Image (cartoon, helix red, strand yellow):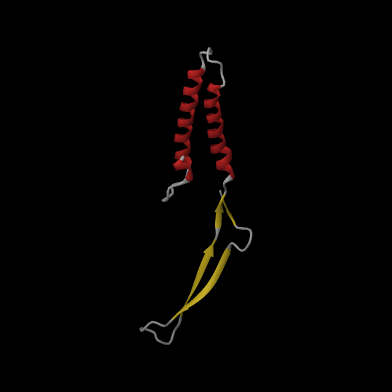
Length: 106
């Protein structure tokens, strides 16, 4: 689910700290690594957003049915229940994040 950036994903730099009072003639070199990765977003779009979009279209399709059709209310309620069940499953599968995510907002 993660991939490295195509150009220079791992950077290393050397930082030399000044000597400590306990050993005044020795420097303290430290290696600092910067690793850059990005999250694969395609599985989320294919698996979650398209399902929610399709369920919303099905829910609004009840307005396109003729008023005499008795299945309008059943179709709407079924689409809403399927969307809520899908959100519960999706929220269990998404990784935990400390910030407020776009999916949680909608």
